[in-house]
Length: 62
Image (cartoon, rainbow, N blue to C red):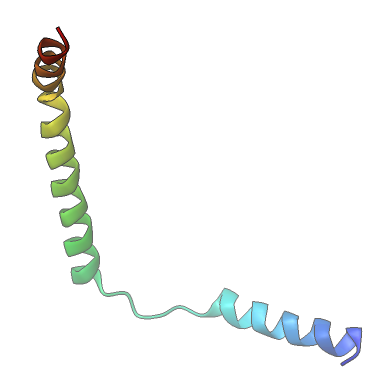
């Protein structure tokens, strides 16, 4: 395939991707974002407990 054909094909694909707009499932998006928030809360809880874990580790080393 020559460079002209290859470039035309890439241009066609790029144009299709640019103007393609799939239907958005907002309910699924909301569920996904809500689950990420609960994951962040769980990590935050673990980080809040970190000083307790660190103190226990330091006590064992002595």
